[in-house]
Amino acid sequence: MKATGMTTGYGRRTALSTVRAVLAVARKEWIYFLRYPTWIIILGVLPLCFVAQFIYTAKAFSGSAGVATPTFVRLAGTGDYVGYITIGMSVWIWLVTALQDVGSTLRNEQLQGTLEQVWMCPIPRMVLLLGRCLVNLLTNAIWIGSALLEAHFLFGFRLSGDLGLSVLALALSTSLMFGIGILFAALVVLLKEANSLVQLVQNTLLVLCGVIVPVATFPGWVQTLSSWIPVTWAVQGLRAALLSPSAWSAFRPYAARLTAGAVLLPLIGYAAFLYTDRVTRRRGTLQNY
Image (cartoon, rainbow, N blue to C red):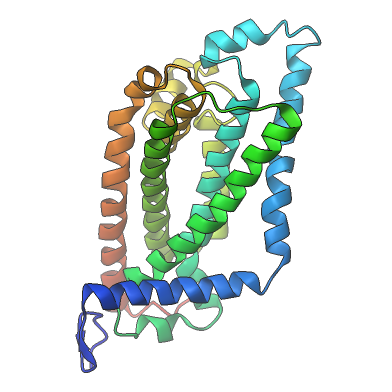
């Protein structure tokens, strides 16, 4: 019997059976996550460590009288450097976990010796990634929630944007990040390497996407490059929605690009995943390290 994931001897695949398979994968990944309780502690502590180091650096450079604040307002469009850094770092960590959790899912299955078994299950291949996406969504909600609460109680951070627009921007950013994760998963299946790719991508985008410094401080050609990176759209769109009192006006320049990224990146990731699936099966290299 061919493990195509379409129709098997056990019955025809339906939308409900696919949803059940996704939930089963998510349940398995969540149980695995809970087997290591220190990971939960890390989700609560690391946001403070990541955000605080840059907030205190910003305080140091602004001076005791905040003499550098007007320059920051001119470059960043907001005087709330605490919120600016908190949101930027939250999106960056979101990207990192999407690459590590979603993008490396199949590589982890391979290292654990279970990839061939799950690959032969009569389910669509994408179920493996979608189940991991659900768990990643939950863990990132804990991470970002921790970062926002800690920034609020320790540094006085407050949201001043529009709640409805913030939810919309968050939903679009979620789709965009998962699209990047799925695209990265396809690349990992083909190249068999995850850690070096994650390190390269996450550290490059930390600089280019204006996570901790305004993009306006970069040379012109770097600003142009940054404007074409989808993660930049998520960072700037969420900042506009969450920090600007006139949120809709501030969000409008990023709305079209963020929406396009939220729609196209998952489709591109899916197409790339199907392509790498065909290539690895044709070459017989799925089990290779």
